[in-house]
Image (cartoon, rainbow, N blue to C red):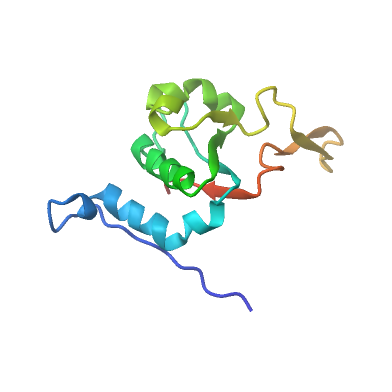
Length: 147
């Protein structure tokens, strides 16, 4: 039997003007509660992001990504951010650069778009990529999305 999922919530409201009570402080507390350090020790860690495209703004603040990357590195993990190839060129416009977030940003199918699995589509009879393999050799992945 599956256990019920746990939802962590950190309100943007602050009752005290302290770093621990800021949204970044609450985010770090959630990261620690999730056991990130224990899960990533000595592992290659893909962080799946939505870095945005055009005028869309449904991204996680780069500072919060940097905090996650920092915790992964402190635990001995090697993080990198992944997203779909067409969004990577515009990532810098939203602050997603390795100098800010602390790790490389890689297209999900690799730099040469070569890691993917082709499957026959029953509706058209044509082969097309159905899943990318940039995470195939990655034992640990973290999804970092704003909903």
